[in-house]
Amino acid sequence: MADRRDIEGFGSGTHNLLSDELIPNDAASESIGWLTKDGKIELMYGRQAQGAEGTTGKVWAMHTGYKTDGTSVFFRKIWDGTEGKIQYLNGSTWTDVITGLTNNDVTFTNYASLSGNYVYIGGPEDGIFKIVTANPGSYADVYNAAKNFKGYFFIDKGRAIMWNTATDSSGLYGSYVDSQDSDVYTTVASEAITAVESGTLAFKAGGATRTCFAVSITDTSSGEVFTDNYDGTLTGDAGGTGTINYMTGAFTITGQTGAGTADYQWEDSNANGVTDFSKSATRLAGEGFVVRQDAGGDATQVVIPYDGSYFSFKENSVYQFTLDNADTNPTNELIRTDVGVETLRAAVGTSAGIMYLNTGNPSRPMLNILQRNPVGDNFVTVPYFPQFKFQKYGYSQVSLEAWDKYVVVACTEDSANNNRLLMCDMQEKTVDVAPYSASCFNKDEGLLYTGDPLSQTCYETFSGFDDMTLKITNYWESKGDLIGTKALKKTKNFIFRGQIDPAQKIQVLVSTDNGDFQLVGTILGSGDYVDYNTTYAIGTTFIGDGTVGGDDDPTVYDFLLKIKLRLGKFRKRKVRLVASEYGYCAIQQMTDFDIWEYEDKLPKQYRGKQNVSLDGATTDLAEPSV
Image (cartoon, rainbow, N blue to C red; front, side, top):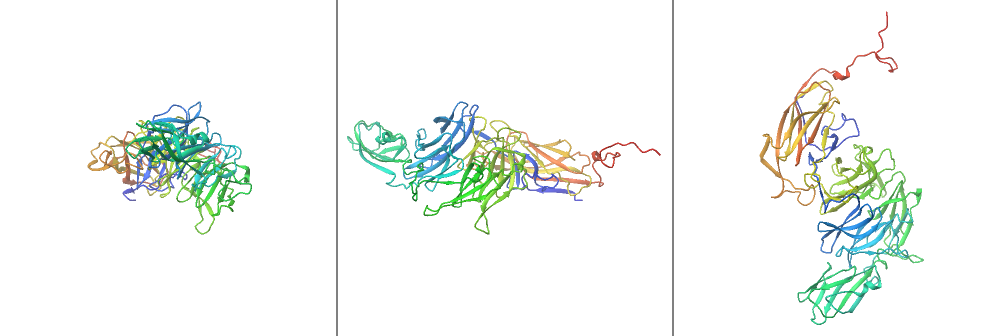
């Protein structure tokens, strides 16, 4: 046989469904904490706290809103053991906005209109709330039984789409289409102000769900005009400054003491806006609606917009709802009855289609995609990643997120709460496993954030080289490799090539013929086989800002190492890699070198001689007498 066996590049990810002898040569039979990327396997990045690390509780939901200048504002819902809270990140401090909520999930959704930038929050147990992102510490409770419902929702094309309300688990609801004109915006001119140094605009007294915008305040005594910058600041034409809270109407102007006037507009989302679900006796275009999606009686878990339609994923079926251009003759079809999802976060839209964790067959869960049939006008569902054993994990709290080229799946393994992330690469069709817990996800500027299921902590995930100061849990196990023959053989040397941080160490262990793993060598980042003349600057985040190294980024080096082996004869062998310190490392090549082939026999431990009865039930029979 050949004197060497090379694996020059890794591109298959984890194949744990079939026997470890049947998978690709470069695949892992099991792994955790290693990612298949760019033809190599690399130790995954770690986690850092976003804001302060929290005490016992749960992060139910996370979200990024945006101010009119593009500045990010982070929100979350947590349970602190006593009450649910909506909070925003003020610098590095999570600050309460709404308190007294339940221990249940909510949805966040952004909405930008001529009246400003908003974040809306909804849930069947908590209600509907509105926040102007310029003033994230203020809110309005917009629930009104005559106008709307308590439920999960998002805003799309100027209209809210709501499902799973407090009183109806299988109806799909739509709000008015926000016309963003004088039908919903009220103009106020020359409102008298007693003192321009501070006060509250009068609109708020007329309705708690109103917000203002386009504010202009004139100081009568000086003639200076202070104009709204749409970010919560007022700028005077003579250099003065002030602030405006669009939610409360409260304003301040520095250094001014006289009377004045205010010009502005206000809107109320409950009056023909995105939280008004009412309709006429004979519904008109642009008004609210409700359609029935009751087949099977199972609850709608999540609704995803895709390709001009809204897809309602229920526990055992999928509906497709499509609005026509005139908004008077929609279609509402039951398109699948053999698939289903378990949670609000079990499906996510991607550029290729809707990815969802299908638990319609509980004994064989699969990650599927719903996409348009390339040879027809209908939609089909296709399983992804058939090489991966999804049934190894639990999905009672499953959460999905689309991130870069990945769909990330939060699930459980031998735990009551989510403690694993499945990194499903949509382009390369690979799956790798991360040792991190997540109840929910959030994204901003390419970075992935996760909420903890057991504490009030949010993490910047896949960032840095430690897991909240701890070493990253990891191992990578190769296939059960026969190295080209079922005959017995010996490998005298291993060769490894890759990159490593000087502080890192990689333990190399080997198991032969299903035996225990034994340490055969260690790759040291400080070894004399490391090429310190070839350096690579790497970022401190896997994806996002800092991915390409700069002057302050960590430096890693190439290495090429041969490890001498003293293994007995074997039929198959598995290699196990464990990074045991802090720092980056990656493997690009693994070679069995100096291979000796022996007789075609079973391994020694399988060669026991015994007499066996014909039915196979009795062993070690006595020799028959003669």
